[in-house]
Image (cartoon, rainbow, N blue to C red; front, side):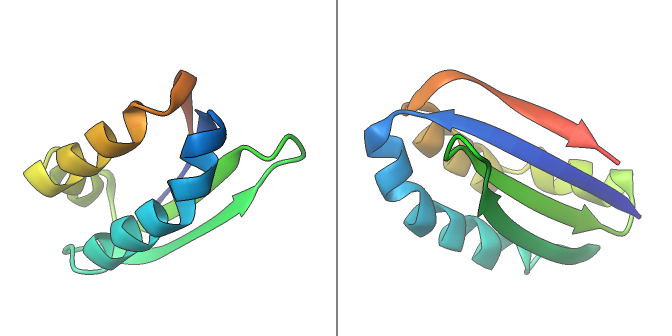
Length: 89
């Protein structure tokens, strides 16, 4: 199993659209082969964190390299105040 956490650094507008965006990410992620779970929370500075689990790295990479995933990334990137950080556990 692979467990990743992605921390997003968003401007105010990005934080306002985050929940709608996350709901779409969650909906599409759940349809992927190897998907286990997805959740979100906010850190002490109100930065969104997305926790995602897949059966293995290969299945995660197939999702991460897909066109729907790329479209979602492009949607949220316009709100970045600095690049996202990814943590693997």
